[in-house]
Length: 533
Image (cartoon, rainbow, N blue to C red):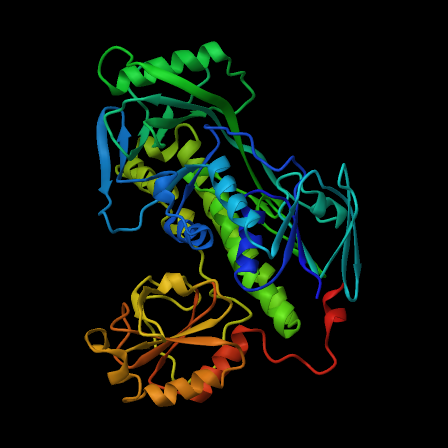
């Protein structure tokens, strides 16, 4: 079968290629550029724990070695600290890392992966769909025709794939603007991020009274100053004056020594593609959506797109297309991103508007600080990973279903589990292999050798039920899971979202849930043609 064609060799496209390779699916990545990304210290990303873990699985590298995992978060207003959060050493925390470093890590792994071909200097100019596959043509030094089973546009804001498929991209322009500087200096908060609203020093130039500082490796920091609406020019002289003023304000004295590494102006747009699937063609990342106001991170959502789509394409590639499964990519991911955009758009007028209730209602400013903290830390409506509560893949009418602390469709909690070979691993480490995960909650098993409990109690019956499922599955055992009673069984998707929790071993319910999760059985006579519209 032909490989999957991925257009765009940024973090999302390379993540998708490696995620498919992990599931034995070959890919061709069409890279418009020369094969490497120019280092830009001021172009960075804050990765939430789930997306950081995804990249660590794919690259086999701890991101702490290439970025900074925050030790804490501090929010200030004027001269007062309004909230402070410290992360324990073993607690999941955001990771701040330069985007070119992410791309470099992914590209290096892809270069050694035989199932991934990265074609540099390959600019897409046409796509043709047929019942049996997709043909893409590229121009440039390596211009040629490429044949694929599916094609995914991960080619960014000005996506050629989106334009060739005539997919509308409505939304709002310039929702926020920030002046950005990457510099090396010493600040009072080592490895802590800071949001400072209405700092007490006098503003100079077109700045709106909010600045964020986020640590980078080797004593570097990224500073973002919120700019007011409009197109006021931020000159180098104005930015340097603001840097000196800000650093002096934070250190209560003269401006400390600093080394300016990079500058820029970052403009945030909010847009959402009307369609994310057109037959055998899909969109992901910035090609499908743009967001990023109030501390939220667009790259996070792009990586979640890749994680969601990879196992569905792999299932279609290996086992034949299930149209419900492929359609669910748009239904799930577009709904989550749309909800994130709605939440941000609803919060923006109160947070960024002048006057209004925030000056006369006690506690409103504190609420705004908490909302911004949620956006920056990946919590709440603004930042938490989305749950696929209304997924078309959700099973119906399971008599044995019980609630746990994780809602159906939400990402599972990362607990320690025992794998089938008896090794102790993290649940998150078993994700992304294309298999469903069946997790039995069995208190006490962690202190016994596997040979003593693998054939005891409900295990033989559960193992038989897992073997009979309509999709490959892996049986795992955990001593506990938040809110789950003993001997309950969790079914988890390959991308780590909870399908259901059953009380005890219920083979019929487990089978029905698994079949719904993979889009039902392949219908007789329904093949590739059904996916072309």
